[in-house]
Image (cartoon, rainbow, N blue to C red; front, side, top):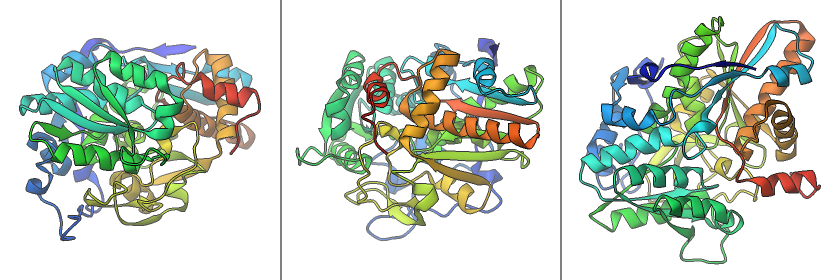
Length: 418
């Protein structure tokens, strides 16, 4: 194993903003009532003005506040690791190299605190004392609960009901950091729920109270912006390791936050392929339509230009709950539509097969979401092995799965279905 670490002094001091670098401008979000482009005042009931400005900023770099960096130092910079034992198990020649950015070392065990901390910071600075949010598998709710604890903010989490019932340990993690957790949809205890219903519950809660704002863990521009610390660090670490650039950058995609975080800082390197990986049970990018759609089930959010399966889509229950969103980040959707990013979908058994090999070679048990990136990285490596080409593969190890052992139990004992 080759591990490349950066000193604390090398934490990025500014976020990489892809918006002004795009070859054509983004289509604006639309007001759900008027269907006109939304303005800052339309978003003010949900977000502090600092985040609204970041959502629409034309600045190529946005400074990270020192107070945010102080908390990021608890786990950043994260390691870049060459998966040499996995390479050996696959019989790869040295010309095919697999690297992964290890985001599992954060307090919440995933990449999510990279945006949870600045979102909590900007809300606290704005005088907001309560945040509402949704969570699928629980990683985002856990991360925001942690972040709110740093700023003494109350955190109200609406958790997709199927995950709430099957993953009580995630609820406990949120409560450890002071979060309050309710199953969604709140109004219908017989509904399995989806990220769309949970967003509706969280938004309705936030707009009903003057002391509250809403926080989102993916999809929106400012969320992907905060996550770019991942790719910025990875670029520096690859140089230290003697690699010029990766040939392909891979990450799982639910809403697009960890994918955007790793991939966007490589956007201008046109020779680098960017690859999104999604579950075949929720194939938004590979089978969805590019159109304006609501971000939630009830139609309360602005309409976003994105690939979508329909805001009323209820995906089948799979273990990768964080990848069950009906839409995708407008930035990610635009890159796929424009041909700058590719997308592939896998069934969950194929992903868990890859996760098991990774855990037995690299010693880390991946979260179900992370297993999708591992599957694609292995397939890219095996294809390069057969073709004879040299290939440097970089993927985002976006979270550990030590709290998801029930998923592995299903896989190991033949109970997992696609």
